[in-house]
Amino acid sequence: MPLEEDLIARGTWPLCGIDEAGRGPLAGPVVAAAVIMDPASPLRDRVRDSKQLSGPRREKIFLDLVSSAEVHYGVSVLDAAAIDEMNILQATLKAMAEAVSHLAVPPRVALVDGNTLPCIPCTCYAVIRGDQTEPSISAASIIAKVTRDRIMTQMDKIYPGYGFSRHKGYPTPDHYAAIRTLGASPIHRRSFRGVS
Image (cartoon, rainbow, N blue to C red; front, side, top):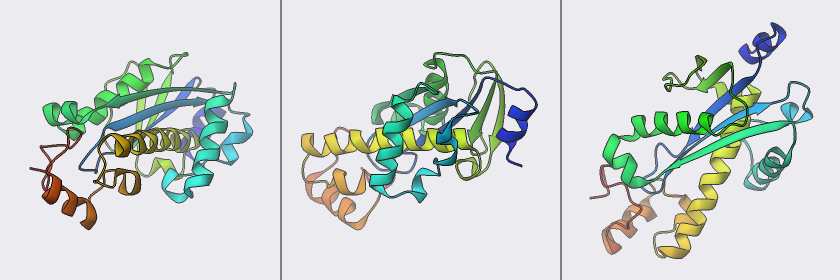
């Protein structure tokens, strides 16, 4: 039985899932989302790890999540400058804590994808590959991923030539070639290998 299901069965509520998008890219922000999803919501059966969904399917579920009265969510975005200042791990943990602080309802328990916990005022469980097993973490992964992808698509219009709308800032041969040709843009993470 997934941990989330077990906790809900024991009356542990409100419970939120937390995940992030954008730890590995060379450019753009890290985005974290925290989600509280009603135990009876039919969306629980539709969410999956964002990486396992096609782009259109992910967008559809994202729209259903953010428009549902059965879902409370918070999002935090930390830019490349913040990542360079504090390092990607600390920026990710800060974004996760901020996402929880934006929830309309404070959670009693948080399930966090991965093995490192943010500093938040509730009981936390680290769940390795939780985006594949815990519905609330899966929902958070979708919201974080779509939010970040949309930001990077906008950045492609502001900083053309890098291909941000295609690779979303992740390290690809084309992206490295663009950096060598154009230099680093204002949204590149200068502390990352291959940028400066």
